Length: 159
Image 1 (cartoon, one colour):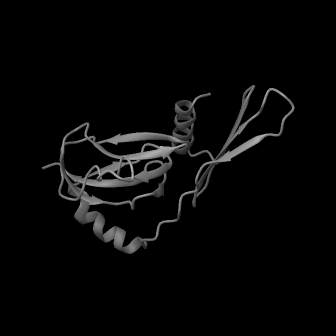
Image 2 (cartoon, one colour):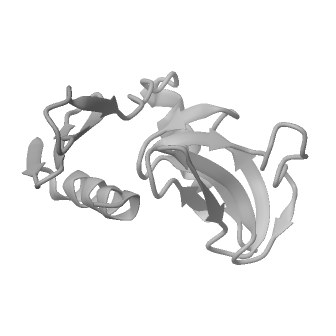
């Protein structure tokens, strides 16, 4: 089972509303647990020999720091903007590498398909592209922060 298939499985489970899914194949055991506070994914690779089991755990997302009341107040102001969300769980980076400039800043004009950031998941760097043309209004995530599936990353003004 490759990374894409695992990511698609995580997305499917998150959307389905199931609380726990276990999948066992010849060489892989996957357990995905979803809850109100966090999502946990455990992937276990079973070696062909009688060696000990390798266990990897995806980063557990941090709880949101913003209280619910200000979020509700800004939701009305931000309704005219398009929200770019994370398609995967991983670590958010604004730069392609530490010595390079950021992909986009607040006020940057972007076209559909422009790279906005990268998200590292299981040692793979996935470029996140803009879904719309417009201007970056707000960056919602700090650099090098863990992000969840479907977490808002950017607000874009399409006008």
